[in-house]
Image (cartoon, rainbow, N blue to C red):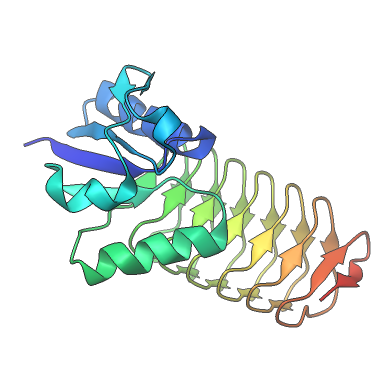
Length: 212
C-alpha cells in the first residue's frame, strides 16, 4: 500500500521534500505526494514537479492522506503549524533522503526532514519537526531539540546540545560539548567554541554574540 504524504507549504523547502519523496518512489519505496498546501492564495492551483497546491494549510484534515510533513523553513511558523496539526491528531512522517546515513541507534522524532548525504553518528537523538539539510553531519551523543533548523553543511562534534527552535546557519561548526540555547541563532560559517545562551545570535570564528 502506498503512503500518501501531504506537504504543508509550497515554497522551495516543500518542493525539496517532494523531490526526495519522488526519489524514494522511483527507488521502489511505497510513497507518493498527496499534494502541497500553502496559505498564499497566489499559489493555489499551481503545480510543482507535477504536484498541485491544493489550498490553505487549514484544509489538511479534509484532504485524503496517510501522513504529513511541514515544508516551511521558519522555525516559529513551523512549530505553530506542527502544534496545530498535532492537536488535530494528524499523523506526521519523517522524510529521509536515500543517501543519508544514520547510525543504528539514532532516534528521530516525528515530522523531520533529513537531506541528501547527511550523516548522524551514534547515540544522537533528534526531536520532532527538525530540518537537517543536505551534507549536515551530527557527531556522536548529540541532542537536537524540537523545531530546530540545521542548514546545509553544518558539522557538530560529540556531545553537542541544540535547544528548541535554534537555527544553525550554513557551514557552521560546533565544537565538542557545546550547548546552543533555545531559539539561538548561529550564523553561517561560524565556529562555536563556547556555549550560546537562549535567544542569542552568534557569528564569526570564533563565534561571538551579535544581538539578543
